[in-house]
Amino acid sequence: MKPDEMKASKTALVVGANGVIGRNLIDYLITLPEWNIIGVSRRGGVNSDRLRYVAADLLNEEDTLAKLGNLTSVTHIFYAAYQDRPTWAELVPPNLAMLVNVVNVIEPIAPNLAHISLMQGYKVYGAHLGPFKTPARETDANHMPPEFNIDQQQFLEKRQPGTEWTWSALRPSVVSGFALGNPMNLAMVIAIYASMSKELGLPLRFPGKPGAYNSLLEMTDANLLARATVWAATDERCANQAFNITNGDLFRWNELWPKIAEFFEIETAPPLPMALEVVMADKEALWNSMVEKYDLMRNTYEDVSSWRFGDFVFSWDYDFFSDSSKSRRYGFHEFVDTEKMFMDIFEQFRQRKIIP
Image 1: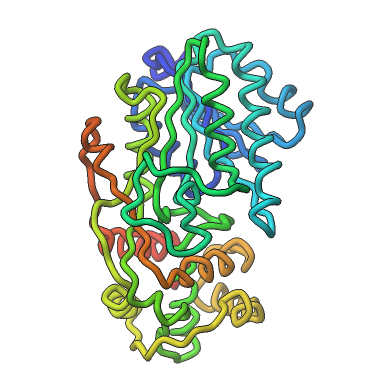
Image 2: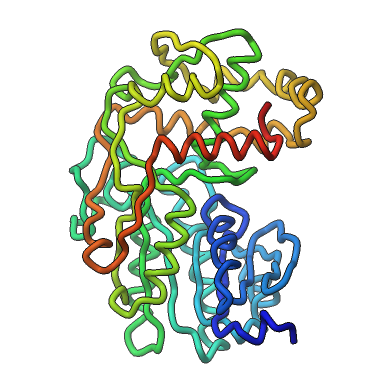
């Protein structure tokens, strides 16, 4: 046994290990010597000290049992997996089934299971449906289903009584951080859109709905979220509680957008509503030429495209923020400057040769 493994007293099962949330959570856990980490995803990953990956199809009960059925050392499940579907109703069965399959396998075989952490979002508050009550609070009433986040939490609430483990639910706003091939990565949307605008000699136009340019918004840094997730999973005060987790500041695109353009050294022009999923659909050849021209990492256009999610976020012509004071009352006091967060992520993309 290696020295690092001898120190570790907890074992994290990070489900959804290659997403923007799971990847940053693993990066944080690696810095904490008391943790061993097992990352679960469809694609697997590269093993290292205190970290190993398992590739599993969580929608398949038999495969989940075969791949996870020997993980008896798990003490904490961090659930951040997500499967996209075309409609809100279609999201429910797969996303609930994956969580159920994981818990059904791990709970009976892991005698020291202490906590299940569930990653949610503002869909709990109906933010995806239209203008919702702001600031949203953890005590707000649920809305008319379908909503898989609510179904997942209710599953844990019903399962937990009489067990030795507790649960927590983390509710970030839009999460930004480094990840590839993720369907919900706003920073990547902006970085690729801005880089292509520059390559074409175009100004950076805000592509969303007119009202969205002036709405009041907030974001959640993936690194901040990772720290909050581990805090909620290990602080007894957080047992069986939900928490909004945000950077702690508010912004409007009309102020931030010109600063983003300045980072990419291009001009801005008045907003022009356009569906990125449509106007960027024919840009694969442009992307491939940029990869060659600037000697970028050989990422496929699909891996760096989250246009549908960008359209979703840029359509919010209503205020989009929550009250995150509960997390502070319970002991989590960290915050992040959102403007700096975006610039740091863009710089990271540039240093890793994701963008020119």
